Length: 228
Image: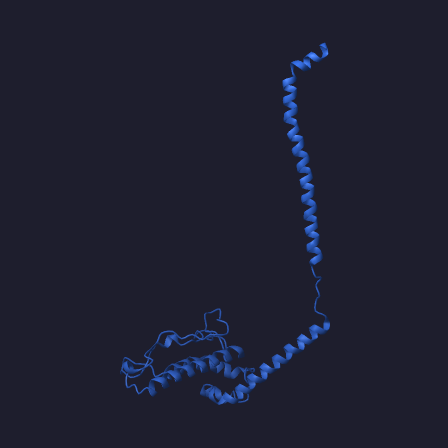
């Protein structure tokens, strides 16, 4: 009995210790079981996703060959269509006078010899001026002209780009095709104003052109107009 006295004296603290320890033990057992269940469910879901995946089926050689053939046929078709349009319209596409005779045997977008490319360096500026005048621009000097048009808004390659070097064949084609396109626009503007019967700029249906941009192609690093 004497041996139990210390336990009886401290029974409150013993019971308190046990009371505090039991929830910890219970929580530990519960969380361990929950963590195991979560891990099992996660593994089950991961496996379900894995089973649902379809193994990749890369194109075989037959598919690749057929695709290349289709692309080649489309390339040939585009080339033939471009050639056909060029042949039908080439009379409308006039090169500068001192270059025209040197371009008679050159196919559309074909390689251009060095002589016409050298001549084009100085001829290009006059081509832009010629296109500008086609619109019948208004002049403050004599009051003639039917549209207010600043020559600087005509899309063009910087005039000093070819000061020391001739344009490449591609550059020359791109620049001249833009000239032809701008010329067509200027002629259309002039025709609209002329057909309206306008005798001066105040009567013109198209009195002013503030911005003129060509869409398509890629703008050059030097800020030149996009080709095409």
